[in-house]
Image 1 (tube, rainbow, N blue to C red):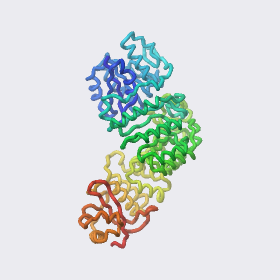
Image 2 (image 1 turned 135 degrees about the horizontal axis):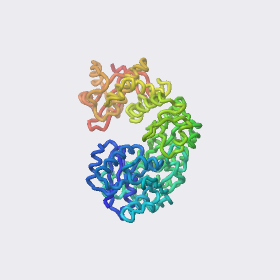
Image 3 (image 1 turned 90 degrees about the horizontal axis):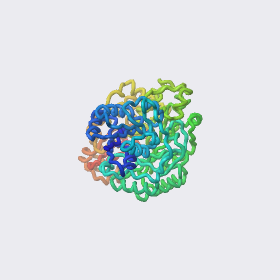
Image 4 (image 1 turned 120 degrees about the horizontal axis):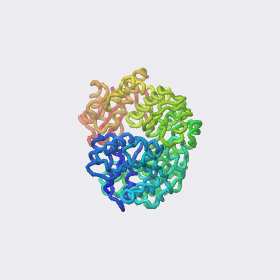
Length: 578
């Protein structure tokens, strides 16, 4: 048989671990081709590529982000390859199976849950006696009747073959994210999460995992993301893996983990702070809500004080970037409660703060209890909540406006100093700044048009002029700093209107003659007056950056751009230089 395992990723840089696990589990008996696309690829292009291989079987890996596009692809494939057997599997079709059997008229089989053994046994039956009732974890229709065979025993993960040794993957390892799992299952019972359904945690063979990581690094993998739901549930296991990665990592490789913050022991963090190279690890921590009553409703156990201790210790160590998650729309968390949650978490200043919205996933306890909380949500994936009895749709929209500018201005780190100053000194709270700016953004219609970097600065300054007019000149000075410090080369046309002054040439002349006025580091550059004109920008400012923060002080900001493109250096001069 000619077999293809296929998925539609959200982005090109993603890779799908599931279809590689299927191929690895079956490749001793079957020749299986991997086919990956993205949800933005034209359906016709995907179908044409699949058709060119003339597959007898196509297995699609299905998730909330790709299910609708995958259904369209499968429908078209069935028209042009009517004898091709189409199999759906993955978390999106594992639950509410009768619904999917009735909806998916172009799909022959559904693999339920853990798919390796089910897919292998299905292939055996397709090439043999075709007695599909022998296959556990398989669902299909026979003469209009639903046939749903539950899974039997779970696979022994220690015996699974490696999904990382395929020759066709090697060339792209350095360009894409590699996903790896060292365990399956989750010990927690959060009612909004599919992981809560499978009880217990099972582990892969540690030494095999280490060999896989060595292989991936040797062959160019740069970003390796562990998909374990709680990587640090076993402290001894996490410590062993951390030590291994510290000892054997290759330069340029980054490892990402999903950890539970409040169970991370201080001695583990201290070990990482003392031993991990900066930038080697990245932590993703789900906070979701800081409202204890809300967490209790979704059976989420979380010790906020210990979580704060973990995030703070990691941040003070300066070695590991942290990505913290929030979920808007949890049961009984109204707008004011979510505002407090946001401010609680933003106070920790994570490198990235993701604001997501509750999704009522098929199979979760919260979806089953949705009527109790008055949820209205999308009928199709991703099943995002639209409102509930304490959070009306108009307030959901307001929070979405917050999410938009948070992503553009905080998570992308374009304006760190500016946002820090505004949220500490001007806005009522950080949430109020992002919400007010998001609403302003929406009234201007900017969400419907594109933008370049300079546009983002202009739009933020427009908001500042309206929201904090008496402070706008001071904020503009900090915004100039943010813009210039992140440039590798001297920009041809900055976002602000800059006028020539008679003072600037005099300052350049003074600095060329007395470079030590700006310190030894500047003097060591040995810049002549013409170099200053060519490689620097000199701007009047009303704020100066000191060691303890920004101070209102008139003067000048001199930014030097290294001709080699290695970045910018900033120096401040007092007003007496005029």
